[in-house]
Image (tube, rainbow, N blue to C red; front, side, top):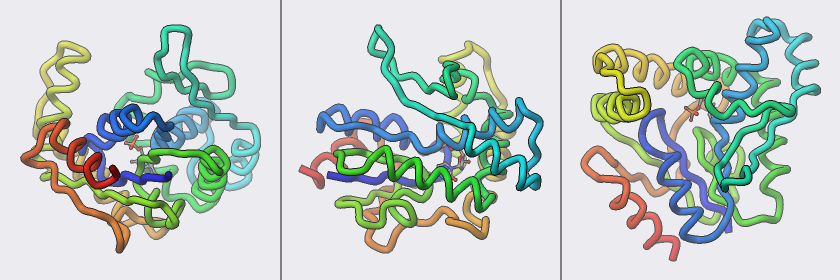
Length: 218
Ligand code: DC
């Protein structure tokens, strides 16, 4: 069983994919976390997007793992470091989008993703899971929502996480910027697969989205 969930940033794919995986008792792949970990590593090592030689070497050295710690929490390991929180900053969001447009980066990450999932049951979440990486998936979903609503959700999430009130217009600008990068890049641009079920989540809560996906898959 392979289910893909794609869509733009801030649409709630991660939350939904995680719940679906739990309900079906199968694994969950957060492909965006891989792009984020790679961006963090490249940034720490001062490797620019256009430095192909250094990037090639980095891609050989890099080892990304998803594990559960003793408390059952999901953690992202970059080589042996826990980078779970570090990869969620705004800075890394922007950088990840940039590195994600580079051919060798996508090539290597795609191979890693295929290796992780091979012969196992998975919910894979990202931008190109149903279109380019796993076109053979049993079920493909594409979640979308109005950018302003995505910005509002993100602001609420940040307020809950950090207790700080963020400017929605600023978040909206960032969302539009990332949408633009993800949708207009030459390689594997974000778009729904031809056979994807498209769900507009603008007026749905998490449970309603989960129900819709779960009913179809069941
Ligand atoms: O889903 P996310 O926000 O964690 O993803 C971070 C960036 O990684 C996103 O802006 C684009 C890129 N990405 C991608 O190009 N392909 C994927 N399958 C997942 C993420």
